[in-house]
Image (cartoon, rainbow, N blue to C red; front, side):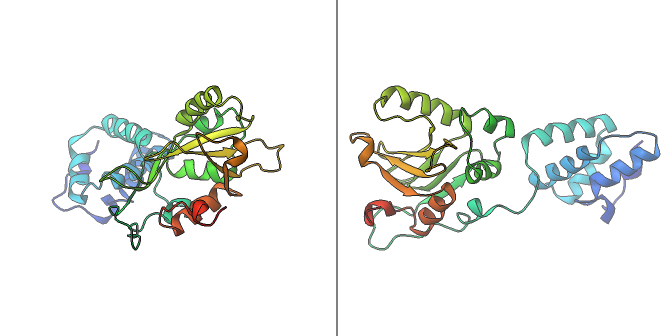
Length: 249
């Protein structure tokens, strides 16, 4: 059925983002009714794999209709839709600055291509603040301002499942200081401090961000931001420095 794709030069209607829509039209002409989302996901699959246009045409020539649909379905599970990144991620896209007077290597920002699913976020034992949910909708995990030379700088942000596991361990280890609604979402590289968000919607501090201190009681922990979005913004602006220590927040 796909002999029409065997052309010496890839025509515009076969190039992303039109190729998968073209398949849908051809299938419809032959009486098939595949779901439109398959072709949208397939288009994103070709884009995410950075497949050259000529290779896209060759792929169409060498595979059956069922093979193409199977490819679209498989890639649809692996990649996310191509869309502009939210500000919570975009602010870390530029190269990390070298902090003046600091001997550490230039830090690196990296985050997973895969986003957390709504089901993974909904599995949290507490209500997830909207800005944290937005971050996970963009990236499942992240390592920000990481010092890859010495491993003594930066922060690792957990995926929802790991956040649950670390929080459960934290509850046991710091039983005296733990409060219902505490959710540990990250750890600072090179030390034992953790990043925690208050997820009790009934609390005045719902959504606020806390940096825990392993050897100090809760009263001495740092309340660093009123929201996760505010924390990320200030952390990005500081170039990965612990701004709460410098300014006594």
